[in-house]
Image (cartoon, rainbow over all chains, first blue to last red; front, side, top):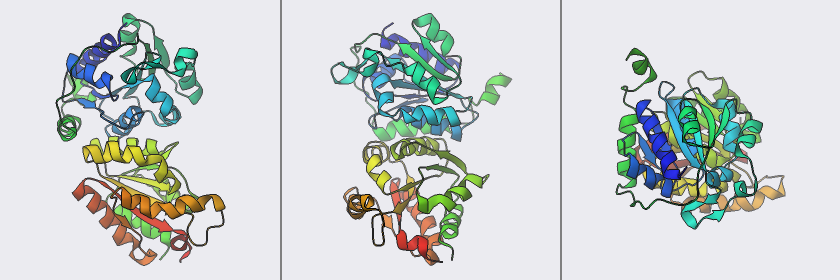
Length: 193
Length: 165
């Protein structure tokens, strides 16, 4: 599975679940912007490694709202403590998807430790995350996107040919917060629908 | 005025309802008060930079966040403060225990302690260092400034602050 295909599946699931979607810096955000731009997308432009943390803060602040995070293997290796924090605080409305392409894809595809066998699902499990799984293909990922906890999505290295995001940081934030703070889309509303 | 209580009252006056923290011995009573307060969601994190991310997400979700930490953690947070909070104009109140200043018994704290005020200055992060008697009002004012200017603001509290009664 190409990363952009995994991102497209996550974007589709997020839209279907009316979920907020926090996306990792670099090409993943650009690919998400290209496949499905929504106000509910938060595109990171800096602070590599913190997508999972931003999403956790959001999920705790908005317990009625589903939050999905797209993070990279290189980024999560930079902030492994996040997995322990997620294990101890992760609410049911939170899902972390680690797009594992075994490399730093936005900087020239230098290998990460997952290329050498570092097992991110094993690390998440060891950190105490109750629900973990590895999605090896699109079908696995589609199923995993319905759950919570941590999912490792195995994807091929390589970036899609997509343009840069033509939104300023403040435009991204303003649009996103409008969607995040809207009462429409809370899980209560979804249940009633 | 008990210094811990003064800071806690400041947080309550500012209507802080979300806290991320990494411990310092001088914050232990404050961490207990924050942890026991039903009006504050408390997320102990593993590293201060992670706390900057958690607090940013909480603010996007409508909360008023504080990051409780030692000044050593400021060094761990520099890039996140710049490329998350400054970039997107996200407010953050930081209550920082300032170690490595006068009276510090641990030599390892001294270099970062000396560098901390200059680091905050270089990052253009407003900094307040009140005495306990003024701490409640100052903490509340620091959050107001963070929210109004949409940036991180620090309340830097040295060893002497925590010793006063």
